[in-house]
Length: 321
Length: 314
Image (cartoon, rainbow over all chains, first blue to last red; front, top):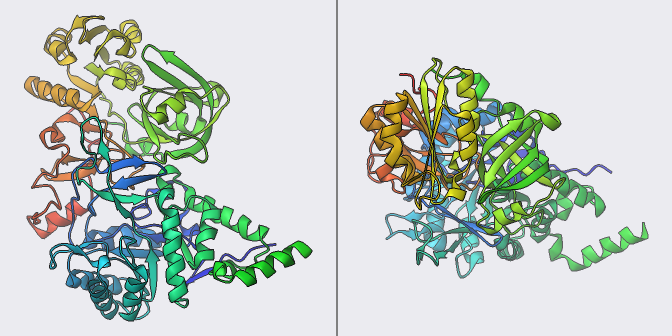
């Protein structure tokens, strides 16, 4: 049986639901040395800002059990270079580009959306709202429903109508459903979750924090249960909103877990550092997992864990056959 | 004065390599892995990364090691040297012949090699000397003379002292405890070696403080120096942005460049040693930084200085 892996992202049809996670794939160029970037659902680019940015001092990284902390500080070349060099390259390779944007103010986000809308070939915009709001004492947009919806509203207004806007949510909030609702009410076409969790490691020899930035974002398989829980809760509350699920996906089985929790697409992040060709391997593994369960379409798996009886029936049918 | 770019830029491959041998070499381990694709593409100064801990490992980050040597046997093998200090490298040390290991390479920019037959001094600290021997062979192919200056804390931590003595025109060894060669550090002996060998070009690999000292001495003698830096890396392929350091390009502009793809080999004087571990205020994109001109901003955006392109000959 051939499993139909095709998935939708706004108006676009993707060959499969496996994406890269922002910040773990650059703009795709480096990974293209290891696999054909047009063979995965889409490349989600590293968050781009208006101006070039040098990021934080080193050390920027610490390995943790089944995960890592990073404190990069959004180093990047800025939107001009991205539009001139990275986006055309991705399109020339036949890849679909989901562009992650980051800013310190609502206006910056809006301008980035406008710039991307003038360029051809952007499949979707992912809004990285886990940035400090410089106009509000550095409070992270994603941690405040009002600030988050202000950004999403501004981006949605400036982005071309046919480019879907996804809000990337932080798990470091009391009620992720409340933030999700606010973003959707502000016009988000979908939600990406989760961003990293804030963490910290102290070097017991130097007796100082390991990271130059003191704290960093925790990612990798260590956070997967948190991510699955967030996707589950948001799917439960907003069953019609497309979700890009991510957080510690390492295998096709992990990707399936996110689909069952309610994600329509799945991003692979930190695992790329462990295995640069992980995305294509996970596409293959997911196809096998679905086939083993007798599922003809990947879309059949989406949100299935929310329907216990339906799933039980399916299992029974499988046994009979 | 370097190799043509195309030759050096055959991309890396990720393969499942079979372990041929793991052997102890003084305080270190040397592992040889069958990896024909990596061996065929290798240039001295490049490195490999390995996944450690097996399929369900809790250690997600690949370990990176500079390539010591490649050989043609078994279709092509790659050897690298490591110190079993952490959980990941201890796991590597426990591998046995015929184990299969996930290895990616060759990564990074290699050492540029002079076209003319010049006098080269190769300086290594600890097992940082590992990549210098294949470099020496390549230099000798170009009829360059090779002098070695190797150092470490103790005699058993000087990697390749014997090979250096056998293959170098001269080999000077220093140890901090005096257990092998002269007591002291490599930079204590560097001036003397440079005078005696009439050094034209210096290559160095080892801990960052040593590279900094070697660079400053090389500047004093006005000798071009190529260094291979050691920075903490997560991916080794240029996507994670953790291994950055401030490097001034030939255009005079400082950028935070990735040591994995823009290095690990840099011209010593282009690395801002005093500012490693910080974001210099004048680095592209530093807080408060403004492009001098719009054009400057755009060229900055085009990325890292091509450290490997203008080599030691100029």
